[in-house]
Length: 259
Image (cartoon, rainbow, N blue to C red; front, side, top):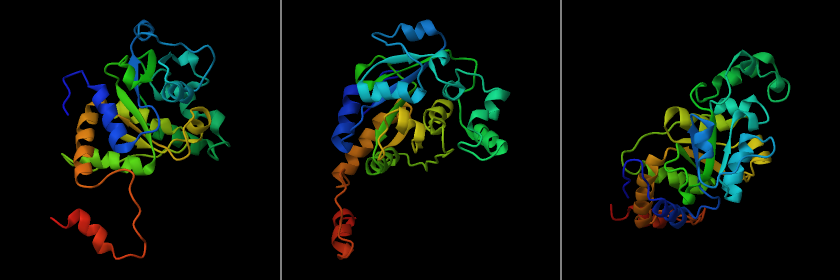
């Protein structure tokens, strides 16, 4: 599968994800905008009528199929906007006073956490939007967000690594793990796997068995091609369990017998 510059065959990509991984949650795109007007010009975009977390905005796209745009003023606090570069990462934000004694014991622990978060630098962007990939309304999005179970996710990564292998390193900041997913992917342009945090599960509708991959769209065609080849090799989802007591040679022989 190939992609023309700036254009992706979303139907083929989504068909591949469904065929090879049976993805349950709706894959979505996220895009940052330098002006609010650019964001509001997206067809059929919704604007929040209440104050939300960024997790809720993402959840509305993934769980409800909406196209939603937001600014820093739509978020309940500075943390959500700061990860996306919509709120200053200033001294007050770095202190994170509201989190002291809640998520981390001391002011020093909290400051360290804030400093370790991977965030989009502040100053360039004024708004963000999320939308299901199938709508094509953010074409292309800056990143794609794919929720999957651990078994689905490791095969997704196997597909990504099939051609042009590269070791992938991910981060875990703990709470505010959106910094590990969309913050990191937007900042680095690299695939970024995260363990969705308490807030993402409580407010964003993330299921307890789901991981999140935030990934620039340019990586998706090669991932689908890799999944197709793995499937030909008999490496498919769902992964059928093998007896914990049986002779492993029969199972391994199926995959490696002709090598």
